[in-house]
Picture 1 (cartoon, rainbow, N blue to C red):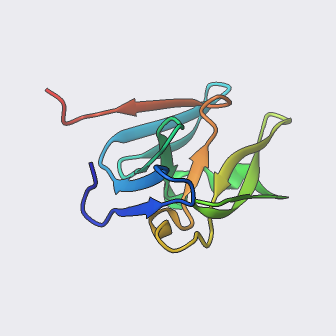
Picture 2: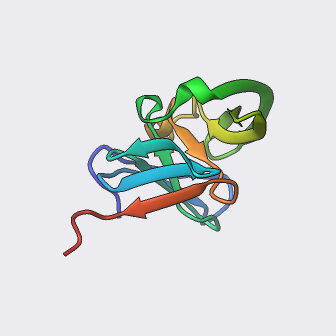
Length: 131
């Protein structure tokens, strides 16, 4: 399902796709019981073989708690990712957030948006339009 303004990226591997879809789902991210992000405008990223990812606008994230790292990775389907660490009450959660500041062509829909590792943060998604 591809929504308005969404893009589809065909990767190098046959059958590998990345689908980027703007959404109005309600997403909250908590770490150690502290709300780090809340958004009603996430961008959904569905990639072959991976769970759905929720990319959030920086305005919806507590950027004051994040520190950029020097760590980078490269995805052949999205481009080069940058990472941030989160510091709460003296505890650092290293590289818990990533972003693609300048994704490759076809993945522009996630440019500059932030995604939390769901294994390291509590990501709650609510469809407020469901009856």
